[in-house]
Image (cartoon, rainbow, N blue to C red; front, side, top):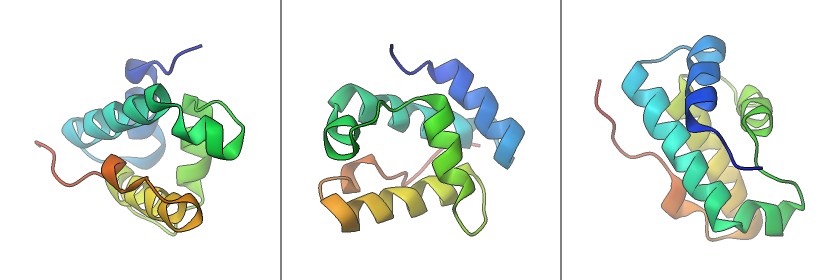
Amino acid sequence: MSLDPDDLESRLRREFGGSRGESHVVARQAVDLADAGQYEADVGTELTAAVVCEELADAPDGTPSDRWNWWIGSLELAFGGYEQFGVRRYRE
């Protein structure tokens, strides 16, 4: 099963707000992370929209990119090699 970027993008906006551009880039990064297989190899769980939203819900607060970067930072500290999946810029 692959991660559907449109489904994730919609869920991100619904659950965490933010702009369409922001949710789009977070969804794209999530798909790249899923395609890389790194998360599944490190954690032993397939990366799905539900997993992403569940993990981002644990972030202290913020928009989708704030929460995503918080989670990616946590993965970077725990396993290494996740920095490339962080969100640096997006179009409004």
